[in-house]
Image (cartoon, rainbow, N blue to C red; front, side, top):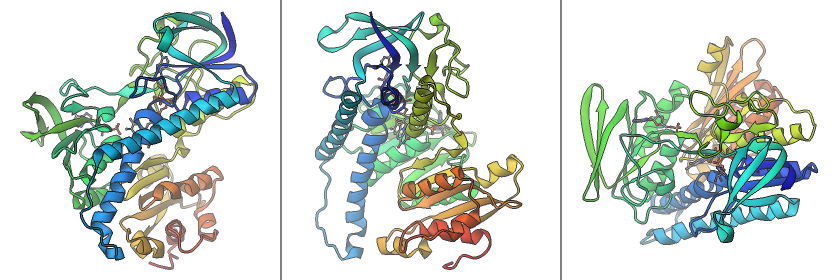
Length: 476
Ligand code: FAD
Ligand code: AMP
């Protein structure tokens, strides 16, 4: 039986990063991965690279380009006649982006000496892992022995019994919605969370009439009221209809049409669409892992229970990424991955600070935030003051022709410590990195206000919002 210092199960952004870092630290490392790509070939990268972050961003970028040319080309003096979508070509491009990146991870494994075991992993007692092989040896089983096991098996789309998914037909999950073969005329999406809004944006831009049904009374309740209110208006102007307080009670598919029944304000309503996307969140992927048999405890929601250093209830077995819950984000999984690798290698590492995980929704305008909202900060006993700056007053946003949105900076009254930033606007996904760095260094809003920002850049909006905390914004 092959012996390793570390065996990682799952090669998403949590598992593959943990494996590479373990190898960098001199530990003999194997990573078990069972993903098969669209051509039926084993692939690394997990949900993120294959059916998550990357393909969704590829389609968001393609559809954004299309929308810019159609709606805004003429403003820039660019006359483009008959701009049309070749969906097949767009999907090929997306698949190529995915292929290149997943092959890139395989290259990194080779470079760092991580052994890729192609197959399905199952935990056995005494930190042994059984691997049911894929490919030429399909069905054969091998066992490997590890000093430490890292479980990074990720998550799968959450199911809604009222809307059973069949990805080849009309009702799909996020994976099916990244591979439509035609632009649906009418599309409904259950769930206006991060994934629902991004997929809704893609298909709305490409020409679908999109309705999102959201059970909660407010859009994106993790943002503060003013921000989610402003977003509702922006999405409406784009033709993205969001029905709030709308709980789906049943769906029926007949002759390639889907009827969706829902309850809203005590009334029973229904709508009919060509296709329906179920985007009601994700759940831990622990099927067939043999966890409970070995003594790895799960919580009431099915996530693996871990301590602040991602240690499970079974000594020598760690778990990280989506399978332990918390923010279901690739960079959160990767951060946990590096932490666990360093701990295994005997280094010290402070626990991940989940208050400093940046969040981004890649709609247009983009939405990004880090730290606390004013409401959350007040709930934790901070007295807050805030400053806000609109992109309409940003020279760079004007030059781009994209100035919807604003930046809001929240600081603490007594100490001026930066508590959080929420931003809606062009490319705020990039701007949020500065905020996270400032939070890491426990900067004050004054620190941000005194920092020189290049002109003309979108980051000046963050600078001005920091100045606005003390009523000193110069351009608003
Ligand atoms: P995963 O990426 O889910 O990887 C787990 C891997 O484990 C998989 O490859 C799986 O095949 C493998 N596996 C599972 N069980 C076994 C087993 N028994 N044996 C062998 N292998 C196994 N996050 C962001 O930060 N930014 C975004 O823009 C973003 N966009 C998203 C868009 C969509 C449509 C979706 C669905 C998700 C998106 N996410 C985004 C979330 C992100 O994809 C996840 O948070 C991230 O992939 C979690 O990483 P992970 O390593 O925990 O698990
Ligand atoms: P996220 O967790 O960000 O992926 O978002 C999933 C969204 O789906 C949440 O905002 C939920 O409120 C919403 N949701 C869950 N179940 C239903 C349902 N039956 N009808 C409408 N929305 C739902």
